[in-house]
Amino acid sequence: MTDRQVLRYTQLCKRRMDILLHSGASWLPEYEAELKSIDQELKELSEAKEAAHKARERRVKA
Image (tube, rainbow, N blue to C red; front, side, top):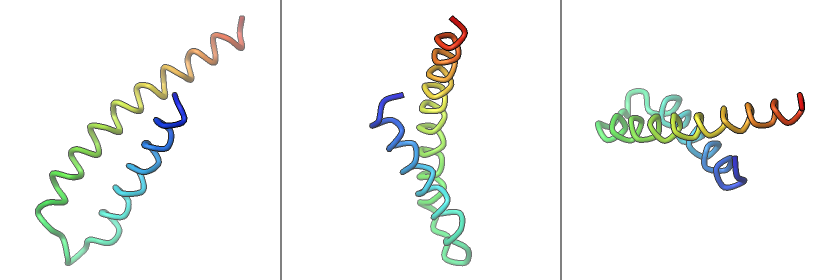
């Protein structure tokens, strides 16, 4: 993972938690679409993260 991908991943996690923890009674319909978008991007970044972990493990074992 690049530094930029790590930064984006943490930003998305923070935004997701902000929405979930602070929306409560002030839930807005827009949050649902935003959460879906965040979840999709996190999924893509998670795949990159897993690939980076596997590559590192292969280097360590070699």
